[in-house]
Length: 191
Image 1: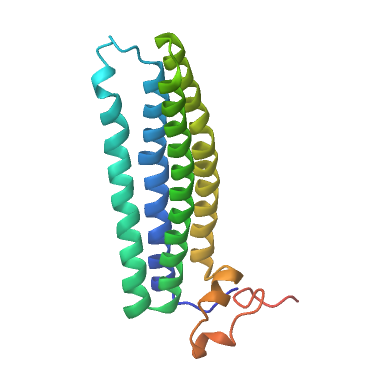
Image 2: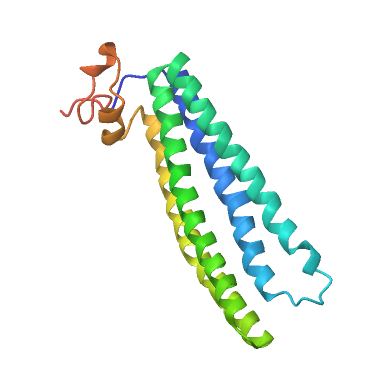
């Protein structure tokens, strides 16, 4: 749905999506690369002590940014313009999807660890854990790429004064904006 939103508010509404893009591409992708790369590192390698650090630091920064987004979404919903609040809420909802993907991936890694503990041979233990660790990366990476595409589209929507229909239904616009929308209200009339 399109709304007649002033340019400064539209510019501000791009901020949560730009922050999400930086978070997704920089920290989350880095974390997945470290997780995958760590599965190739031998236990006697000089890089072995840094495997956990390579995953924990980007994950911690990513969780902090997601937490900031959720807090900012709540605060903006209470005190800010509706359009801006809707876009902060949209970015926060997409972090929830990312967290679900991480829980699925963590569950698969945990299952790999449990299955590895059930094996008697140390070689089979390593094989079982590494195999499921690499499989666990797939849903996280696919989710990450989908969210990058969605956030890219959300930046474009914010610039145009658009809010996804489902979000506008869940968080109705104020009365002064409610009747102004329809499909291309901000587009010039056809000749």
